[in-house]
Amino acid sequence: MSDLDKPTSAGTGMRRSLKIVLFASLALNLAVAGVVIGAVAKHGFEDDRRAPRIEGPGGPLTRALSKEDRREIGRALREEFGAMRPTREAMQAQYAQVIAALKATPYDAETVRAVVAAQSAAMDARVRAGQEQLLNRLDDMSPDERAAFAGRLQEVLERTQQKRVEKSGGRRDGF
Image (tube, rainbow, N blue to C red; front, side, top):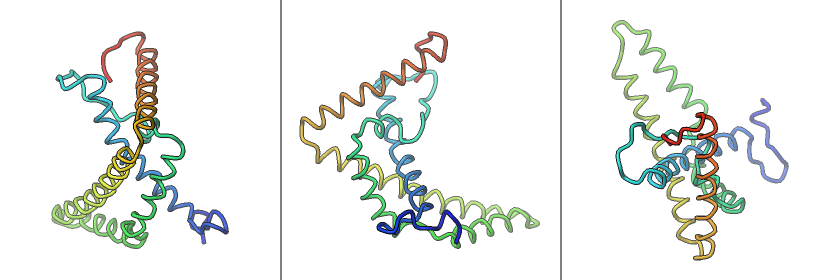
């Protein structure tokens, strides 16, 4: 058993590799929502010269959540992802198919496309699940909790913009 497969504690039985995968998945889920909301918050719906960039794990929405909200969403996603998570063997089999298709003469583009499409569909499902958990949490917040979240989100966006301004030598354009 590798270190990644060992349970992290006797009480949880949660494997470290599963925690890493779940955190990465949550981060990606929330990053998508964060980019969209962040772009609209900064630029409105007007066209901009450049597309907004994803700025780290989870984006502004994740960073604006309280610690307890992040834990609650993480718990819900772990429960949901248990059934969605592919096995290591299944992932290895997919990559074996891709490698064989890449080496084939003639090149087997259909197999590569099918595997990539399957991986994309699985990722999309995880992204949608994360977005749904975030939206459910926002729906469940009291007005005071939502106001506090909005304040934290505004602070996160302002800090992010300030860092960009500092990094760009004072330019305020771009997200």
